[in-house]
Amino acid sequence: MLFFLNILNSEELNAQAGIRINTQGYVIHREILTSSGNTIYDDAVLTSIDNASPLPAPPSRLRGRLESQGFVLGFPE
Image 1 (cartoon, helix red, strand yellow):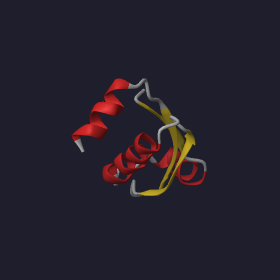
Image 2 (cartoon, rainbow, N blue to C red; image 1 turned 90 degrees about the vertical axis):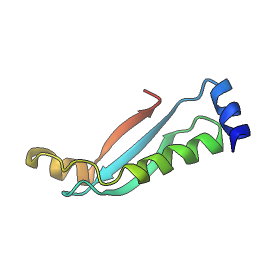
Image 3 (tube, rainbow, N blue to C red; image 1 turned 45 degrees about the vertical axis):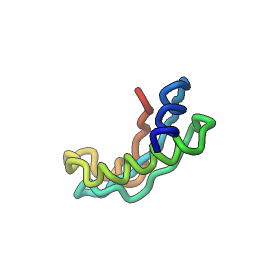
Image 4 (cartoon, one colour; image 1 turned 60 degrees about the vertical axis):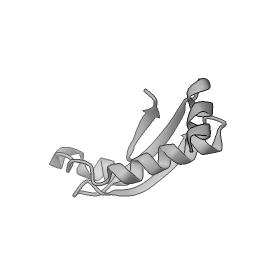
């Protein structure tokens, strides 16, 4: 595992993920929208999203949009 971490740390990797959450903040869909070009990194992005679920419940005014359209999250930004 340390070998893979060293490789990932030595590259300039960026990815964007699309995320949809339900009214309780649970991730109901996630996908890579812009790949880093590195499968290990992209898989780690999706795993980190899974591990973060549930997120805080969204405010009522955003619930429908976050469930149907979602939001984009950049990694590492």
